[in-house]
Image (tube, rainbow, N blue to C red; front, side, top):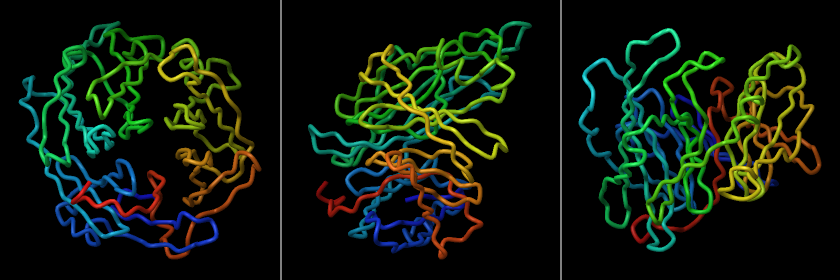
Length: 338
């Protein structure tokens, strides 16, 4: 399944020999009229056939297979800790609590206020607020974690990676100093949230490796690399790639071979050269790599056979450029009895 920024999406049948496609207008087909006034509608995750979709103040849990949906309003934003001007971001993640058989949504609101910069520093105040919605209880509760509630943690990724009952975001710690790259970052981290225990954990990325990968200094590789957070072969993974007009694209795949062990990051393989590819999207559950083509089509790449398959469907308008993708598998799980 994929979506674009206008609030449309399409389903590709999960079986490779069946090209049946259904185009969905999320605001109309789901009767989510409250979403029409929002610029972006996000697909947060799909678990057991239930899709979490929404925006900053309202979202829906939706099982397309049995046509059930539940609209959930978010609690009011926490009291603002700063006087204007300030910025804030709102992030969501969807997960399953296997111990209580409960579906949950976590919301993270981060307030950010910059102090007047000096020559070598840019001090920023951060406040992080966490709330969890329980489908069983049909209510929100606030999660207090003093170690990161009032910290200089800033999350970079809008979408969490759900893996083994835990959601993961990419972020960094702001040390208040401008580094050699002109950024006020200390080191990048992965923030995880266990959906059953409702506890956070911080895993540091190997900065000496990942910084060189993202900001190469040699003249041949002077173009900045980007990375996509994903899961590959039951390991957390990053896909490194370069943006630009290169004819051929290469992707470096790094995996965390032992979960939670910061020194276990290893370069697993290199994908490429590939022609007509703009950027990677994510890995599917069977190890296939979903890519975005230069023409806006979604392309499926088989790492084993090195074969590609264009998934663009004639019924899906070319003007809709996919912004994100997720793997969807049908289920008969009811939201009423979940």
